Image 1 (tube, each protein chain N blue to C red):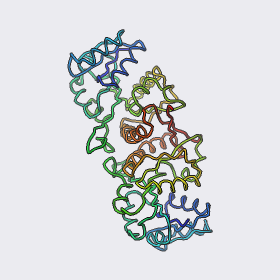
Image 2: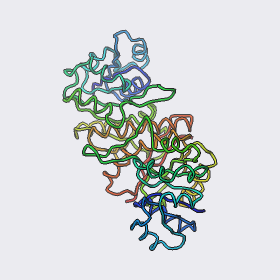
Image 3: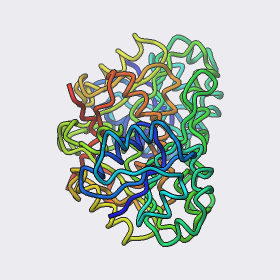
Image 4: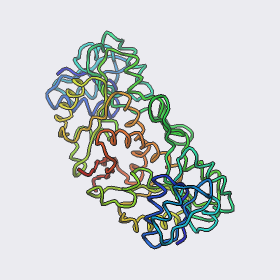
Length: 217
Length: 217
């Protein structure tokens, strides 16, 4: 597959590197064509790794991963435009976190979510929210955390969710550990888990943890 | 111990009944002295079960459980008054849920929480937020859900959190499955888990589930 990964931070570089390692072609997209982090990433990863603007990355790809921060996602995707996104699976892994008021704040929250914002802005993109509830190293290597722990997916398009579940399987997540929560509105539920994630991160002192759902049968 | 359990809904009746079963004295508090649900509960439970107004319940007790809905918690506790709460452990198990806009909404969320609202309104109460992330039958019988699933506690007073952890132990929660997230501000984190809880409830079709935290050592 040809993937665009938008965002040259740790999340984007980690996801992009894993996708190349799996044999996919990846264009790591950034705001400018001469992003040094992107260039260094492409040199290090080699193989199917390329770089470009957000628009160039999306235009060259069959599926798009939004790995920029949740608060700038609409701006980054806006520079792509609908023509580069329509009909494509758009995997949103972002969280709308910002350091404010001496702590970490989440906005939007409860009444909206980044996943919904993106779907509203690009109604013909097949938005799937997933992976935002774990650290990026866990995203691409779930065995960093022992035992049976889960990911969530949500989105309007069943086929897109199945395609994303297959990709998560390539990352190491068995399909039975990927829980479909429903439509894109449930992006609120998974984005609102971030305050708990931050509390656990502070408590454990490292990001190699995740949640398992236990239930009576 | 002498407990006040405020609220005659399923949560209050379940917690009150378990406390009596454990040998505690319980006054189930409601807005009016002649609440039929409370009277029926006291007849059925027997033993150390009594009923009264919110103020009578709290006044007669060493510790208070807030089991009214999160959106009416301040009103119920306001009818108790600070004199009935000062210096006491106040266990808040509530969630600020309401059916609005064709769905379930959570308010306050992100910028505030019921736990914090209560602590601000009653600065001399020892507020501990816990148990709000599981169904009331799971609260008092964690073995309904298999595995090593967890509860969270938060609050400003370490001694109060230890006392609550001991009570949770009486309910069947080993201390190592009770995770202290920090001060009462973290009530935001656990209240914001409710949208995920509701999604999982819809998916599983029953409330006998909970989360386990898996982590690298």
